[in-house]
Image (cartoon, rainbow over all chains, first blue to last red; front, top):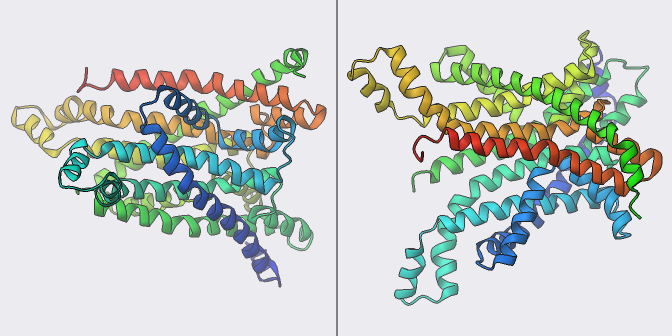
Length: 224
Length: 218
């Protein structure tokens, strides 16, 4: 099990943490931007307009059936050719995660909105609340409880999917790890095991708390 | 702009890639079903130490990306003297990742059957074995199938990552062709078509399966 001291080399752990920061940053920006997109998509999905419905259906189904890596390739290689739109690798990742997360979140929003019985908004209306008031004070609080646990799970999925960024050449935690491994190949031939082990652990430490939060929320609100 | 002759020339590459994807997925998913079944069984039977180990495994597997798992298996493990081929790593990786998802889906399915079903079956004179096989399991399968089907599709999509350890699946072919010939349009077109051809029939089959086992609505 020799080779663990590669982790104690000056600069190794700080550099890995910097890489992790890039990963978390991509995920955080994507999740943040997903929220408005998801709300919009979810609202569009509840509309009765057949054209909007059809377009949303196509959008959701296409995003859902394609592997995220294929979507990344489409954005990174495809957009440059089709629209002459040269996204850098990080930009392509964020864009894909927003489109993908927005579609998934949109479907969750749709489900949550549709799970609130019609009678709730009718009662609110009869009690004298305006449309906006009934949405903010009656529908939204109930919808959020159904929405939040699954959304936190979606955030975990987005964090895990950020690992694919390395395949487009983004210098994030995995890439930094590979650089460290390559630089120390002769001094620490067993460094590979330890560096990948640490990266494995880092992802776990980021995602696990999110999973726990999701599970707690689910339990707390399950019986309402 | 769009070069059909390029598509004709290189379509066989994608057929081979798709076969590689299907090969890895078929074995990987079978493995994940076995792992899932064992884990769900251990959790429901409440076997003391094994149960905690299963929990740890499920948390680790669900909270780390497949790509990092594969890198660890493919590049890390050989340092411990465990040298596996890329195919084996991909299959073990999919089994490791999928096992936890399958376990959760199966456990949810079994927990969805109320205790009273088994008790009623017992009171009506069925043996414990009969009440499980004839009463509990059919209902559990019915409510577990949507989750299992979703996991199968999820795992096939996740398998696109195996190209990163140099397995020649459809993703790998697309990247290779773009790199060699810059025929981005045609390569990405074939990539999208390949995944549609693989995943559409499977998701339709999944829908049929869900309906077939939905005893309540049928």
